[in-house]
Image (cartoon, rainbow, N blue to C red; front, side, top):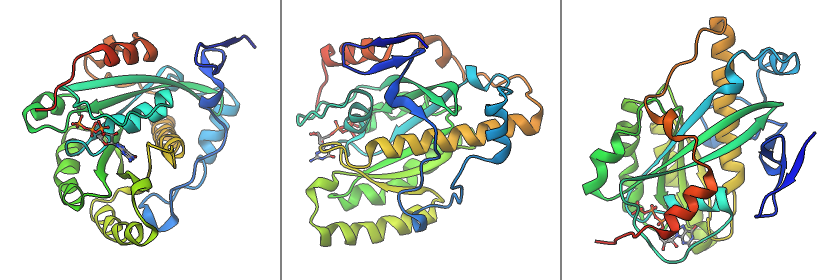
Length: 268
Ligand SMILES: Nc1nc2c(ncn2[C@@H]2O[C@H](COP(=O)(O)OP(=O)(O)OP(=O)(O)O)[C@@H](O)[C@H]2O)c(=O)[nH]1
């Protein structure tokens, strides 16, 4: 199998980095914090992957969108996962940014597009045009700012309106800033919101990386399993196009990261 080394030090196996190879179904953050009872890939999905009968799924792009209030930590979450970095300085996202990550799930290659939208009200209509066709909706809130939790219901409603029967997540950030007591308090409230929106709850820290990789792996596993199961049931009908987003996927994740670092961001 061809192996290369990226400049970041990640080993590439057949165009997928070694740390993007998923062979086991990632479990929920907490069994009581999810409406999704899946703990493993569906037997039919496993069999199809083992027999290499996955139709067009291997060519598929899974689209994830992150939404939430200003400064809750959406960009930091994406940057921790995609580039393993954390920036203490706040730079507001202008409109929308995206990253591309390639995975191998049970030996099948899939591409994850991660759309990081701006929380600022003035960019809301631009960002909303990117929700269409998303299979993964990630509503982010800041666990040190309860107001941002209250707003998650509306964010979820808006993002799901044009998404594609998405897997729904409610993700709390900045766990590193909370004492155990403060964390327990906000977790209790967040679980109520998650249950109300039928979303799976995760608590993360982009500063120290806690739960970040597990969260994205869980999102990929859920989306892959659901979509392959649907394809198997439908007898591999031609896969859906997800708007003009496909055009842009050709750009590499690291190019985009460099572009974003250079682009001027504003805070007003
Ligand atoms: N301590 C800590 N700070 C964080 C964490 N995540 C984000 N921050 C900080 O919170 C601020 C906002 O983070 P961003 O990721 O830019 O927020 P955003 O949600 O993308 O903001 P918009 O682009 O305006 O929508 C920055 O100063 C980050 O350093 C975290 O997990 N822990």
